[in-house]
Length: 92
Image (cartoon, rainbow, N blue to C red; front, top):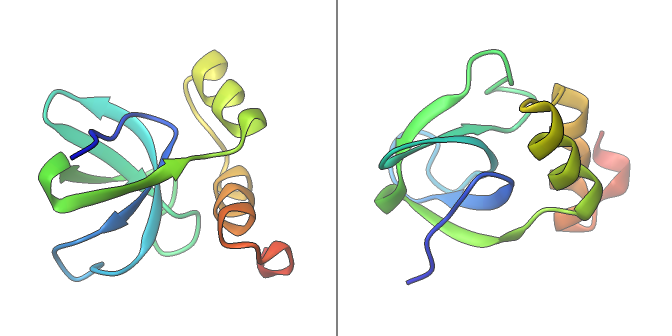
């Protein structure tokens, strides 16, 4: 099993958000802070254990660089990264 880190696209495996793609915006020990830019906004990310998510892959390089430099992303950046991952650029 591959461990998820900040700036990874993950799939929620448990809870009421099960089945949703989210972006890991930060790490806190055994927890990831997840946001999708819509229902779960960047201002209040979901705190979820690593074992309750499945890593799907890394987000695009621009988003990863912005997150690692600034330490945070806008909701628009998160939505764009998820849309690029799913191939649905018009979903913003």
